[in-house]
Image (cartoon, rainbow, N blue to C red; front, side, top):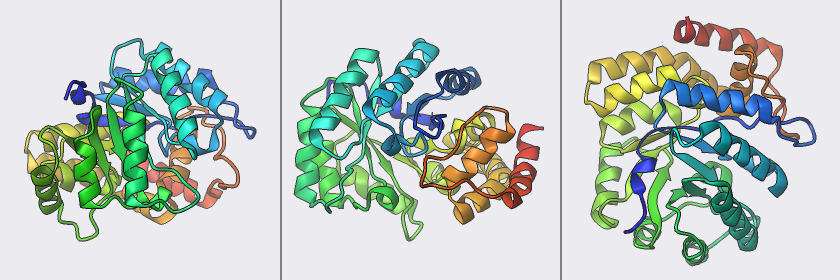
Length: 300
């Protein structure tokens, strides 16, 4: 494997993409969000993921957002660009944009209206990987794409040149150690295994995951880093303490959806997030106090 896989390790922060009602990105607000993450010391930044509302932005606005992120990061931390799109040809255009603009890695989800087969997704990823020298992270997010990667497909993809990592959802049975063990035994040696689903991050990292692909770190990087560093060092007591401090936010994420809650967090931090992309509706004011109460011990 000739790609640099280490950019996918540790804490990867997934920020919002601030935009107006027409989907025009506010690059000034985005630059502020990105710079906060760099200054906090996250291990990487992943823009235009699900929290970055990639599916709601056209190619030109995605390009503007990525150009802003590259300029702001200025090589200080690895920058990963989401390239998921409905058609393979569109994905390949986004790959070319990411290479031209200076992204360090790519995040690919199997986006489709028609349900995809395992073989179709393999062909899609294989063809996309062949167009680039950038390392690719498999975006396994069935809650949004409605596609579930079989263990056999993950194993096949791990052997495709340039596929360096996988972003896994939380296991339904909670057996992180078992799932990680099965992945390591069936996949190419060196595949980076990370998890999303913020409320499972502590368990995933303590069980041996390489990375946390984090929603909350996109706006609150310091408490996310505290949890990550404790877990990766094997300090269970400090990890449990850090996770408990975040539990009120995890409850809100589970109840209302992390994306909608993130808009409230950003607004309360004065980061000008804009509004969720219609038809997604913002949460009503009754949730604002609960968000403020959950944030208070984290930012005080």
